[in-house]
Image 1 (tube, rainbow, N blue to C red):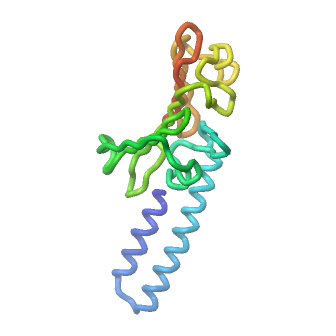
Image 2 (cartoon, rainbow, N blue to C red):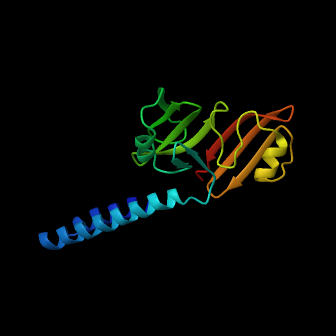
Image 3 (tube, one colour):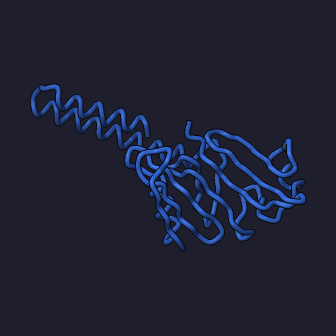
Length: 179
């Protein structure tokens, strides 16, 4: 997405640098085509994320992925909430679906996946961990943890946080690493 913003900014700068109208139009058209190619590559990159992903009803959701195509695939949410973002310019948005909550963050007028919180045992991670799973299942799926009440795993641009009480999973959250 950063490349897309840089390409669009470069195209606008080129357009203002003079030259004939045909040259300016050709440069802008070339930059726009390159921006579309970059955007498509970005979508493919999100689909092939090297971080943790959550899959529900055939829709794979990666942290930091552009949220619009994901929301389209998920359909109408049960509940929607928005508030001014503390960390970014714009609105943080929260979409509640059966079994999970998807939160977003804004960047350059585009919303991206910030986190997913699993709310009940009707959904699970691709590795089969759900609310109610046992610590042994978590460590078998993701590796050992330094705590028996909080398991944190980092992969790519994402963090998987699993909370447990008495050896049983009580919370599962995917979190985007934005810095």
